[in-house]
Length: 69
Image (tube, rainbow, N blue to C red; front, top):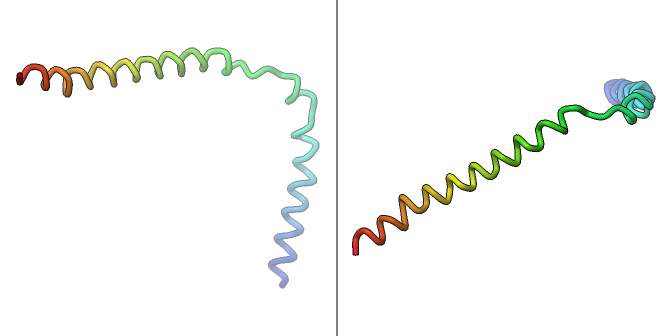
């Protein structure tokens, strides 16, 4: 019972202390600069992986089927 009361008090204190930090205008008004450079990197990585999957499928499956005939 005592440990439950201590854990409830500590969670409540954490939520009360963290609430003003999450709602500050500095966090809400500041743009995250990593959004601008990570999006093209992720997009180009996705395109590269998709292209490599297609090329490797051709070489390992399609070309071997047509070569055997």
